[in-house]
Image (cartoon, rainbow, N blue to C red; front, side):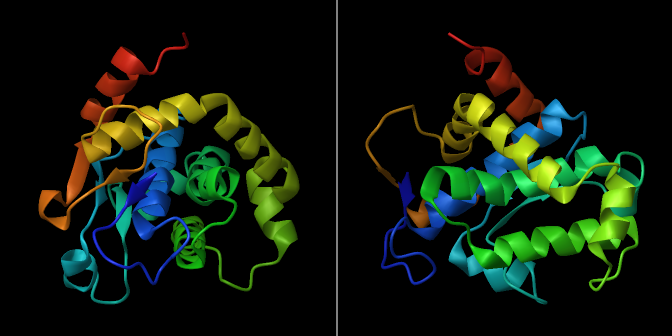
Length: 194
């Protein structure tokens, strides 16, 4: 659990950092497991939220090579699983997700797939080759099975060692970032089952 140095209006229960570190780490591990290479996974500080994303607030991100169609069209099911992993990890571990993250992730997937917001569920399921319900269940099961590895990436991103006590991070130590190679190396060193 991560906490910010000040009161948190985004999620007063867990703190925005808990959500965002977990969300982005889950995206990263899901991408690695699905052979979707990314440039880096980054968590920004509040000062970077509007500077880096003038069209909306992004608290962090998994940065893939554009355009999104490059990684969505070639393997839509894997891409959709990777997109869902962030918010579903939040919900599994914290009991809820930040709605803006979920909506933003789905928007990126839809853009990459060439789907309109109003696309019928049937069209999405045809693209995926599975029901959305089945994909969600599969990703939830993957999160439970791989939660330890997701935590390894959370801790590597934050620069903290594993522990059960909440970690307080100062904004001065951010933004926080790992490249694809760094995330893979952390998983190779610490992410193996015991």
